[in-house]
Image 1 (cartoon, one colour):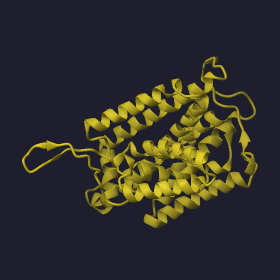
Image 2 (cartoon, helix red, strand yellow):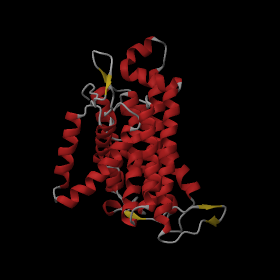
Image 3 (cartoon, helix red, strand yellow):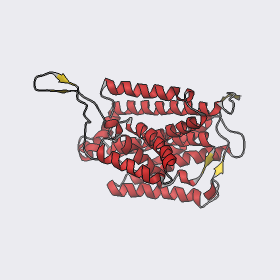
Image 4 (cartoon, rainbow, N blue to C red):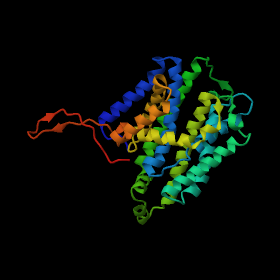
Length: 334
């Protein structure tokens, strides 16, 4: 799932550099949109640890995303915003704890039953905040956004500088999440997870306690989703039950399919493209979902490995001479 060629590494580096300089090239509106795309990329990347790496498809992953956002709301109260050094660890820890409980129960099932159990837990969490006044009910609630502060000192930011600061924090957290998953996949733990995806019975026969490995992956994915949920509150300053809805998990799955199920950077590409597609769809038609659906359908049918699966290689002719022929490398259907 990691980049295998120098060309891919160069393209990823160029993409990261472009994201770094983007706030200096576009208006404030697109900085806000870019921040939303980066947060979506963190969320999709967290789900990729389950779907692409371990073979676990979950429709309740948004529960950890939304729970982290509500955690920031509950610990902040009606007072001033707390330091990000308090809110981020708290939101991540609560999301991880919830993932531990949900995973311990749902991972006792497999396949379709696992999918439905995670969906059930997600819906339970949704109605907890939707049907009670715990987080503002159906209308949601505004909150004091986390601030960049340390030991009483707060980084002074103007109204124009704050969105740019949040953008770079989101970009830094996305890079940290990606590098963390790279280290996981290169470790024995990551190789066991990929072995479980291919053939869990074989991993059991080799002596690995697959349930524990899957639970550890489930908790890690939940914590990363909590990071994304925290950044949503810092970006928007608002929470509502829609953050926990199953359709939010489905959107993350679409981002993974669009970007590529077989690569670690696929969800990042998918999140950026999906966010841009939504913005473009609104400009050309009122039927935004129709355009998005058609594009995703085309991508799944024409590009089985997603956008990240498009590779260019040189084919050699019968004489041995290299002739530049651009070909799209196809893979098995998802």
